[in-house]
Image (cartoon, rainbow over all chains, first blue to last red; front, side, top):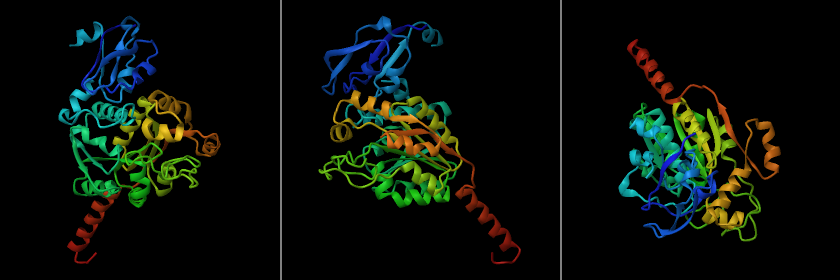
Length: 78
Length: 278
């Protein structure tokens, strides 16, 4: 089972639709209090330890601003 | 930014002009995933008409022609005729493809020209403010049908099958994996490919047709209402329940138009060399 090292949400492009929170099966996100550059409330990564790097949030993000970085495995590749 | 976006998007055009929660961004991603897997980005040529969905191609770092409303398919035929090695993809919306450009769809499908038409269906004219479209469901209240729509809706996939398209699929933005697979199939297919994508439009469809402008609600609506069913005899049953059959409906091999043109030219040249006139 994979673990996530980091989930990046690009604050330049996020429009705060919260589809990532809706689609996530492991409850990683929660509504945050910071605003993106486009003045929308962004989601916040609350429970990173729950993430299993399924990539659903990355695949469903309509603004392509999510990047899920897995632990170790991807590091070795680089 | 997503690694795919870093690789293929025009950074100076970002952010997307799509509303928060719009399905068009997911289509960009699914298409780029298919292109990335096939490695055919240099062969691509895109055309687009007018509408929200016509902007899908504009953000990608590939050749694109943005033309008059409804005339994206003739422009694509032009590109294909002058350079048959190109993989031509047309992004249109339901109004662009079925209403204003309806005749072009019919005749491109009839001739079986090797191109891919991606029709993004959000069931309404979204960019202009929520007017009734050919794909709007009967009974829905829009800006131009305040007492309910009385016109029967037009099914793009059935039109394409009847007109003679050789690859027809319908998926929704709630199924991005299947969508990527359909894009790959269409790009590799020799002949006219038609992909209809049911997409969520929280701002217009959601607010006026479905009753909620929340992106999550619209996404869930698509998930609940798109049922995989590839057998045409069962579509009527599903449609009677208010649901939408999705799947890869058709894939057959037939003579392709540009190859036929080349063959005809060859035949005429040979006949003329022998002394005949045709």
